[in-house]
Image 1: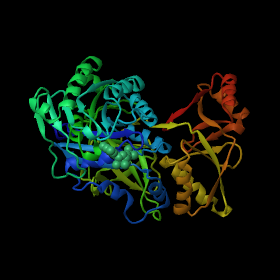
Image 2: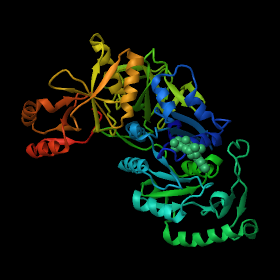
Image 3: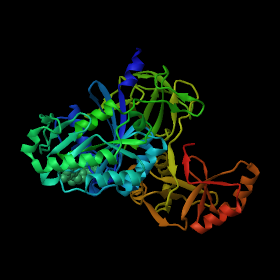
Image 4: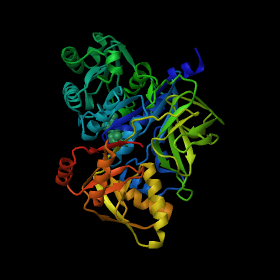
Amino acid sequence: MSDIVREVGRRRTFAIISHPDAGKTTLTEKLLLFSGAIQLAGAVKAKKGGKSATSDWMEIEKQRGISVASSVMQFDYRDHVVNLLDTPGHQDFSEDTYRVLTAVDSALMVIDAAKGVEEQTIKLLNVCRLRNTPIVTFMNKYDREVRDSLELLDEVESVLKIRCAPVTWPIGMGKTFRGVYHILKDEILLFGAGENKAGQLVDEVIQGLDNPRLDELFPLEIEQTRMELELVKGASHPFVLEEFLAGELTPVFFGSAINNFGVREILNALVDWAPSPGERDATVRMVNPTEEKFSAFVFKIQANMDPKHRDRIAFLRVCSGEFTRGMKFKHLRLGRDIAANSVVTFMAQGREQVEEAYAGDIIGLPNHGNIQIGDSFTEGEALSFTGIPYFAPELFRIVRIRNPLKIKQLQKGLQQLGEEGAVQVFRPLNGADIILGAVGVLQFEVVASRLANEYGVEAIFESTNTHTARWVTCDDPKMLADFEKQLVNNLARDAADSLAYLATSRVNLELTQERWPKIVFHSTREHA
Ligand code: GDP
């Protein structure tokens, strides 16, 4: 077996999706703890908050207790290389999350078992479904009073339209939470509370659901569990690997992230069942991860921590081949060679220089601009990886500046923030206004504070009469030109120079669509 085949085969790249507060951060920390990547619980949070130069938008992040920026953690587990991609939980930054989901091969869905399926989970799962991403489910917080487990499964099946295959089953809950029964292994893992048990990673195990010891330990709960399991057999689905890989069925695990309970089972499921990197669509052809030549695409750009330097890191998902330090590859959109000496990887304990990377790995390319979300990199072949979505914004503001002499800085700042995907920038065909579009209102706050900090521009945002936007295309160039001419006051170009129709109301949009049946109005746009 060649190196590449072996390396690709042992990679697992996934993201955690959840509604805020379901326990994503806590679970991330425990996953790292299990892998031995960190010694102490609390390290993940400490890293987020601390460190030297904190810009204002990080202040926003801290104040609101949300994670604005998402990051990447790589660790080894059972001779596998696991890449865990963090996603911002706050819905105002959901665009960033959608893009991260294009870079993973599977996802871990965390549900607060006291609450069940929540709104943000529904949205994120729908994004996973676009690519049939396999989903592992974790029902969290069983150390609390939670909802009936069967009812939770039923809700996942009916709301999220995915079949559930419980792999473990909870015994009791809240004060009487005793552990979980592993249905496939026929063994009981006894629950022991304790948040930071880094040293004690093995739970006590009892073999067999009928083991009389269970009746001695907790007769009431085990009786209840046996009854439930009878029902579960009839009401749920057996685990079938192919169905999981097709994104049709999700293995379900129960536990308590904060008590580090049930976490190893998830990690094992990811290693045993989740797919290693697969083929990727690069427009002209499918790219196999084990091809020798290197290829990658950018799914995220993050401003560097030091606002004065305006450095940015482009996050590249490797799609094929082998990346080695010092190799040259090509930035296709600009036709430029990149000598990748400064590329970084993301270990749980901080950044390290990458020596080599394979499909599924994420590498970071420091740059001063020029790289955009969706850009492809290869050793020369003209590939274009697809599927990075932009969503039609729902909120709009006109940007004004207090000091007109700063117009250049404003334009540069917005250009870069637009390329990073922090906000969408529209330039109306008519007039000199700049209109910003966002999915969540917090995005404007981030933009305002970053413009001030990084570009020295004090910007004021005013409301506009724009209600919604649609990207427009037409097969008939003459028709499009006519459309442009007649509706010039409603048209704008975005950061990628794509033409967009800015509607003043839903009715206005509908009327325009009726009047121009040959023009196609798109509510999403893939990268140019
Ligand atoms: P995130 O917003 O999804 O990242 O959620 P966090 O990991 O920050 O958790 C949200 C809250 O739920 C925090 O107060 C956690 O301490 C708490 N939490 C997480 N897991 C558990 C659990 O298993 N049991 C209980 N009781 N609380 C938990």
